[in-house]
Amino acid sequence: MRKLFFLLVVMYAVAVLAGCSDSKEAHTGSADTGKELVYATAKDMNDMNPHLYAGSMPAQGMVYESLVENTKDGIKPWLAESWEISKDGKVYTFHLRKDVKFHDGEPFNAEAVKKNIDAVQHNAKKHSWIKLSTKIASCHVKDEYTVELVLSEPYYPTLLELSMTRPYVFISPKNLINGETKDGVNGYKGTGPYILTEHKVDQYAAFEANENYWGGPPKVKKIIAKVLPAGETTFLALQKGEVNFVFTDDRGTDSLDVEAMNTLVNSGKYQMVRSEAMNTKMIVANSGKADHPVHETAVREAIWYSIDRDTISKQIFNGVEAPAHTLFSPNVHYANVDLKKRGFDLDKAKNVLEEAGWRLENGSAVRTKNGSKLVMKLYYDVNSSSQKSQAEFIQNSVKKIGVQLDLVGEESTSIAKRRSTGDYDLLFNQTWGLAYDPQNTISAFTSESSYLHTTKGMAKAGELYKKIDEVMVSANEETRKSLYADILTMVHDEAVFIPITNGSVTVVAPKRLKGISFKQTQYELPFEQMHFE
Image 1 (spheres, rainbow, N blue to C red):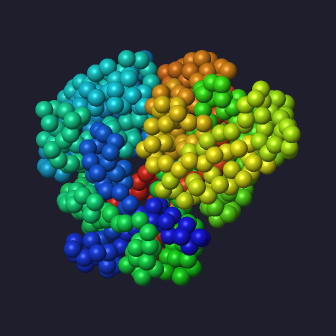
Image 2: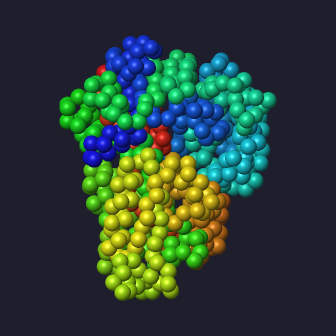
Image 3: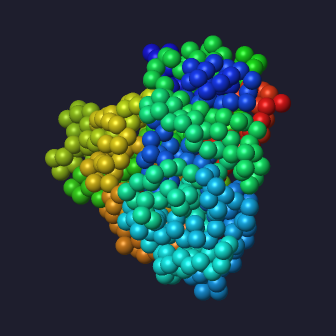
């Protein structure tokens, strides 16, 4: 069983890169000189339209770029060399680089920026999860390389959301169809370090170095995203040396078996590099489900006390993912808040349920209250071995406090639909990551497509939503800190987001590969910075 778990997890979690001698050989996965990288993906690259969401984020990150870049040290210039913000916080004036062209030779200028932002805003409903889409009033060309973005009201995360992988990135105006992107595009020409040169659906996509890239041509000249079947094939490629690079993006549904990584590293040929904590894996509880046990804070809190995070960290993740006790890890901006710690304590969990009126009667193994049994469903991604293992572990633990937890494995798309409709008791999910948090995960507390059902059953939901609206438009740093502390305390006290572990990005690569680094996002790597000694 452990070997099967190992193989399946490797398949679903890794992105594999191997050197090849030419494009045809790259698709067969033969290793070679280190000038070409081939990574395996369980899913096709899909639609690379950067203003929609079906495409592969690692692939889009290679092709398209944003005005600014989110770094560990804050927002830095990227396609915009500099910017000014008006005193009222409603007008952003960007001064663009003058040495940038799209992959098709079209100039990157203020007119191109306006066309792209207008195209995004014409489909604003699709982007409502990003609050910026609801704040942009207009975009104006001031001169050839100066563009002005006007907001309806101040919005402090503006630069953060302009730095994300999508949708506020730029595609050649020639690729727009009648000035729009909402119904598709006729090509995928960005300004990034790599150019998409070939795509065969469900087989592979090829990206070649942009030799005219404004940041200098990448040293790795070709990257192949190869679609491989789930199972033993990819793992055998790793063992045979046909694959020499492993990249796990920790998107919540997949976790790379650390034993596999250690096997590669212990061979003496590989190095392992990990990012800092990027996200929090968690169980999301539907507080809005009235007349159901999950609606009660006491029930949610008892589940929290029943989860042995240390054992999950050590046995399921081999210590690579650290136990999490709060919604966000302390390295997330505004999230280093003093919150009540709920450790693993089955006796405490039992007492919480007893005090709430949930009793074990007549020798029953399941608690009851007013004739109702303490039974709930936990949904997990059927393609994630780690989620299934965690679900079974937690199921066994809560059984000891008189809770019956029924496990249901479904496709991730089905679980996402449940989250938006409220048709769930408990489900696995994760925070959005350093580049997006806390603002985007917290904004999602009010979104019906995300966490509205999770939060709307809270006793002070109205007050929570008011504070969220306030923090997003606050221009005062101390006020923002105070509001975020209040928001995080409210959801923590209500136990609607039950944290499990903190995930990060892991790379296993040849020792001679240098320049491995991480972005503030868990979804992509800066491949253009890599080179072989």
